[in-house]
Image (tube, rainbow, N blue to C red; front, side, top):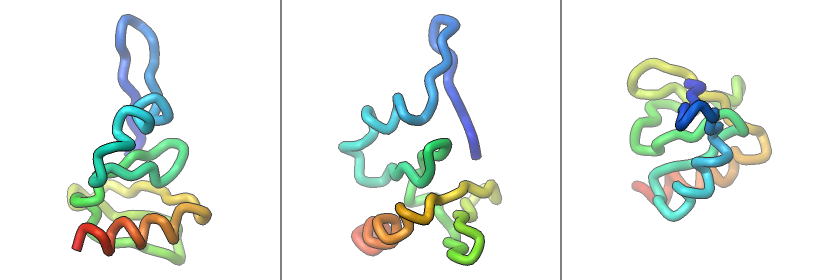
Length: 77
């Protein structure tokens, strides 16, 4: 799911929020366009480099972030 926020007519993209959310372990920057709540990930599709979310949206995950994603998910268990 791609999203951006508008604040005083300025677009704020995920990179802006990545810095603000970096201390909260449940959020993960899966791709330059996606920050996901790890507790809402339903399935990781490695062959498609994607995450199926509980609300049925699909978020892409960068190949270079896949190992870190797996580590973070294991920490949540």
